[in-house]
Image 1: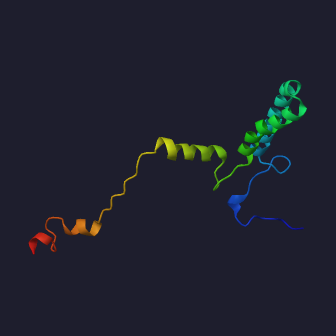
Image 2 (image 1 turned 45 degrees about the vertical axis):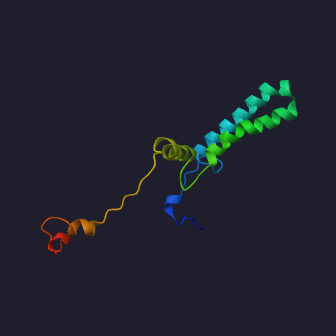
Length: 117
């Protein structure tokens, strides 16, 4: 009998049902629920084929939210980071270099001060 242990323990994710994490399971259920609701609401109005395409489009955001991962960030964390960096803290960033060595030498009483030469 062989027990599989991930090489990186941090990559381990607890699965709940069908090999899906809780987030993936809930988002999948929301996607299916949205698709069924849209199909039942728009099926008689638009026809079955058009309603099925609208179902796919309405379920896609929920499915993406459950399975999206970028650099270890979930969709909510990623969107918050983008909002923070592009909107909330979007001021121009100015780089000002500080030469610590020059500042240390220019202090009063320094033996190698340029003014004492």
